[in-house]
Structures are given as structure tokens and as C-alpha cells.
Image (cartoon, rainbow, N blue to C red; front, side):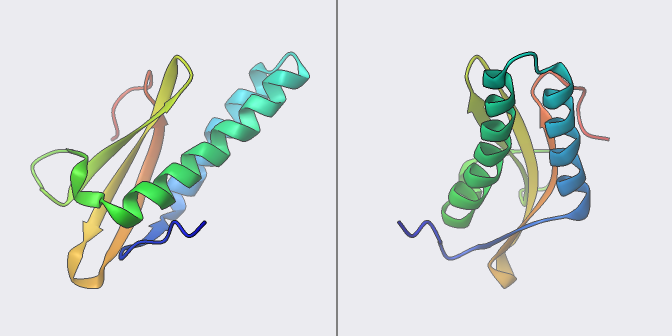
Length: 109
């Protein structure tokens, strides 16, 4: 299955650090093998959703702040989820994921 779209999707270093932080948090709280599996699936789902959705329809998601090019992608996972903040570079057909957080965390700085 080819999920590539017209937009290239890149993760910034801070976004990759966020993903690692979220993974570490899930691992620290894991008590069963299922919890460990969930941690891995959660991180894979965050990446796959960003790559799949943002490569095809980056302008479809809610605006974040005053710029029409900075937006938030909601990533549902079970009863909760994550939010990926990204910026669209339309002239380059590129999307940069700037940050990733759990929905219950404080807003981005």
C-alpha cells in the first residue's frame, strides 16, 4: 500500500524527542506485556498517522495559532490520543512536524 501523497513529511528533532519522551513515559507505566505492546503500537500509530494524513491533506486539520500554515493533527488512540503540531511549507510541498504531545498535556510552549 502506497500512502505517499504530494507532500513530503518530516519530523523535526524536537518532535522526535517528544515521541521518545512519550514512549519512555508509556514504558515506565507498563505493568504487563500488553502495556509494552501498547507503547510500541502507540508510537507506530503516531508516526504512521502523521506520514499518511499529512502527506495527503495537510490543510484539512485545525489551525494552531494565527498562521494558517501551522496546524494540529489529532491522533486518536483508544479512549485518549495525541496531538501533532505541524507547519506546512506549501512552496516546497513539505510538512514539518514540530511537536507531539499527549492530549492531556499542557499546550505547546
